[in-house]
Image (cartoon, rainbow, N blue to C red; front, top):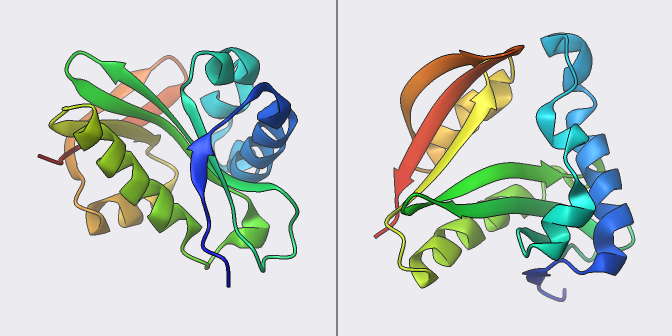
Length: 155
């Protein structure tokens, strides 16, 4: 099977970025009681700014982009704003490969850590991130969002 490729998103990917983000985060709307912030992001602006990296996964039966990350350099670290994997690609290691890409991207930029946060009600994420080396550093309420903040040292 052809190995997936993670690449910078281009303008033509914006509809797929929107669709994958919506599919990945929509199940959380009812649980957390608000629309997750990634669903309301300006995807076109993020793509134009070089913050979005996408991947496809041959063999899923899905055409085109099935996963993505949104990252941004911020105060000496790489901030992982969003990880989204289409539900049809779950269980195929797409998320794991995206997280490894983020680590490598941070190192390539000379940054020593990756930071992220997740909603406290997204308990699946709270179980997954520690398995990939992330440690909890804080829990804060930001408007309607109860967020658990993580960091991972990569250098």
